[in-house]
Image (tube, rainbow, N blue to C red; front, side):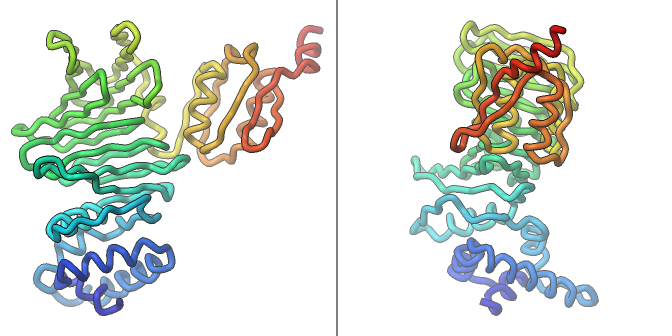
Length: 333
C-alpha cells in the first residue's frame, strides 16, 4: 500500500488504485499510516518542485481526511463515478470525528452524494464549488453530480451553517422541505430537523431570499442580523432581530443557552451530547441561561441543578429530570 499512497500523492494512481486506497483508509489504523506517509512525503517535497499532477491531489487531501469510516458505501460499475466520489471523500473534514458520505442510486444519469454528521458530532464539509458547510449533530446534506456545473442545489435535513462562494451565474439553493433559501454569496444558518415544528434561518452576512416550493407568491429577503422562523402548521413566517452568534456559535463548539425553557434546552443537549433525556411535565417551562464550551455533560447538569430546583436520575440509557421537592421547600421559606 505504501507504493499506492506515494502514487496517489504524486497524482499517478490509477482509478482502480484510488478505489483500493479509498477502501483501505476506512480503517482507523490505516488512516494513521496514511497521515504519517503524507506528512513524510510533504516534508520531502519542500525543497523540490511538485511532480506533474501532484499539486491538485495534494490540495484535495491536505488536512481534510475523514476521521471515521463510511456508514456504508455502494459500489458502482462505472469507474468514473468512483473517481468522482473518491475526490469528494477527501474534501470532508470532521471536527468531532463523525461524518459519512454515501453514494445513492442512479436516476436518469443523475447521481446523488449524501454527507451526514454522526450523532453527537459536528462535521465541516467543503463542497465542489468551494463553499463550506458545517453540519450539526444528526444532520445531512445531499447534492447531485451536476453540482457546480449547472446547479448549486443542496437538500438539508437538520442544521447547517453555510459560507457560500459567490457565483453570479449559479445561485446556491438550500432545500429544507417547506422553505428554500436562495443565495449568491453569504453566511447563514438553517435549522430544519425532521419532526420539528419550525424551520429557522439566521443570516449573518449578505442577503438571502426565502421561497416556498408550494406557494409561488411567497418570498422574503432576509437582512443581516435577522432570524426567520417558519411555522409549518400554519405557514406563518416570523421575523426578528437577533444576536447571530447565539445561533451560529455551535459550529465552533460553543453552545449558547439564553433564557430558554427546559424543553428547548433538552433538545440542544441531546444534539450536543448524543444523550436521550426525559423530564417531568411541571419542569418544561423552567428557563436556563448558560454557555457550553468543552464542559462534560455531568458539569452541565450540575449547573442546571443550581439554576433550577431540579434533580436527575439515570434510567438505563436515559437521563431523567425531576422536580426537587426539597429545594422547592427551601426556596419557599
